[in-house]
Length: 260
Ligand code: SF4
Image (cartoon, rainbow, N blue to C red):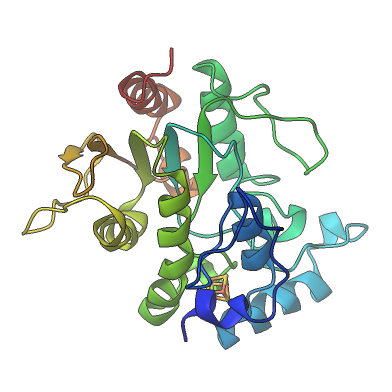
């Protein structure tokens, strides 16, 4: 099922003008995209899991009302830099409703973003914590929390419509993308190729520190793609990814994207 097409008929769209929906049903703004993603129910296994986690909760968060829905991207609509993760954490984004907010992976990521001047705070705890991002948007190739943090290939491919739509809307400003981990890398390359950029064959392999410049097929500038180990506990607790390594990739990508 194409979730984008499925949601087009049922979801309210903004008024005409700058926010007018395209004839295809593609969202006309990131605000509309985020609202439609939050209503998506295209993957039965993930819908059941995210809602079960929201019902049963973790004991430490018993007094929370979990979000329990797809988690949209977060950050300004004219961001030159995009960070692509994997999927929301069951008791992180699936609880708070914002990417990387309320879990240990987010603690590492936001500390680094703040250190290099891309976030207003090193901590992200809830949607109303006042945190803002500067020139960077954070998204994921799968918007629902998956069991064991492992989406199936079908779920990854189903959710790709949302990632492609987000890339399309960011296209005018987007200059660089940082992908956290091999799963995100594999999921993002086809979406980039579908939107505006040519991904070479064979496809570039994921590696921490990988950097690939993708030529544009439209009149716009090329895009620089950066690989970085995911900020998962498995990587950060073992020292495979250190804060310094993460800051180095973010600094390089931000500079490439024209952010000081
Ligand atoms: S993973 Fe993506 S496509 Fe699947 S239900 Fe969630 S938002 Fe929809």
